[in-house]
Image (cartoon, rainbow, N blue to C red; front, side, top):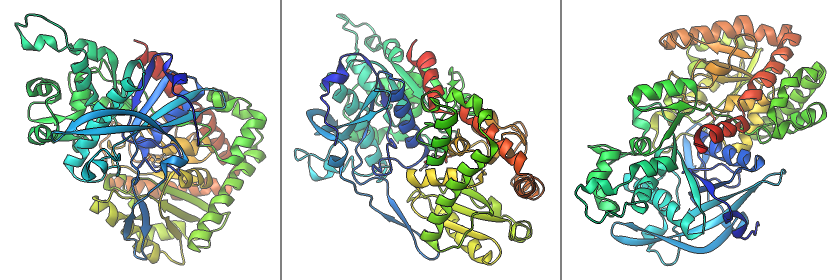
Length: 568
Ligand SMILES: *Cc1c(COP(=O)(O)O)cnc(C)c1O
């Protein structure tokens, strides 16, 4: 229980960081995946660096969902209820938003991210589950990514509009609003309303809307390289659910003529816009021609994503690393045997966990490949199984494979992918040990990214905007074996920091060639290096730490947000 008066946080102006989901810990299931974990790493680094930040998100009291898997790999979704009172403090203040003509009250909870440096970042969790609201409205902040379009729009009204009003109610002075993806873009409309020009005689209605002023306050980060991934609402729905905060004509001017496109709204009303990797910036420029789109490549919070054994190792040889990951540049000081010992300790922890959970009988010495991410078609979790017989030939007695990942409840192809992996697990029984662990969350992620030998990623390009789990792996000396998409284009040096799968970035993707390359390299390069050239393997582990973790951390990312986005 953290009990801090809010006054400590409202004395100086803040950057408000808005995110639909934030991954603070496994016990607080208000995140679904990469976007939320990135938000968590953002606030953790901000606390370490003592940045003047306040986070705003939804309470989502029933979480995303807890995943069970039956014997055939069918996903069962259970509510993931948690008790906010165990982690945060309810605040007495209220804000109001209008939804379907009703006044809906929004409450707030205060969670404080505390750093060992003494830095502290308050997170405001918005909550409509209040006695003053009707039954339906109380549920608006219950489920992360649940419900239908109307439900999503209501959540976005609470987050964007309610969030701005709540910050004001709590006494915060905000100098920048950072939208982590389009879910919070409605905040721009509230800012337009607040900063409306006071013109006596209006000869042109549009002149009262001070878009320039709002742009100066807003920063927008896009995360989605797929057109369908951007939230869009029909204006029928918008008019039914949202009150006329500002005239529809003005909304259309910024949010699109045909439908309210939350990304477009964010882009039109921000004067700093970025993608989350260089390649993603280029893809985004193609999707939204005419906008000035920069890039700040994602990073992960070094301390959070380093296993106990590597933390101890870094403390011994690289003191200060956690708040200054640049110190990884001196990884060459660490003796090979100690790197390997730290790795084996993390690996034993994972293998013991796997055997306890599944009875799979995995062993410590077999080359272990990990693949854990959202189960959705473009991630191609089954690329490794494109040719089962070939894999059997290459891998029998030489590899074991650990999978994990949730499929969104409405993503049927994603769910079938999990079942397919279960089928192939059966087909390979007796030759290659494959397991699928249920309920992938942050705690399991740390075990996986630190305990396997190779971290596999096989997305269909260019759909991986950045990806971050491979950066976590690198913090633990685990080698990436991945398609050249997202961040890996920037982190990959062949045979040095890890290995690529498939063609270089400029060459169009071909699934068959990707699979061919995966098998060939696994057989000729990865497996032989692991079993026959341990010295080279450990050199690559050092490079993963000294080059990849050195750069792909959220301290570097936040310093760049400060200098490129916040201070301008
Ligand atoms: C880091 C993380 C992710 C994001 O990893 P990707 O490489 O982007 O798939 C998703 N889920 C959890 C639980 C994580 O810890």
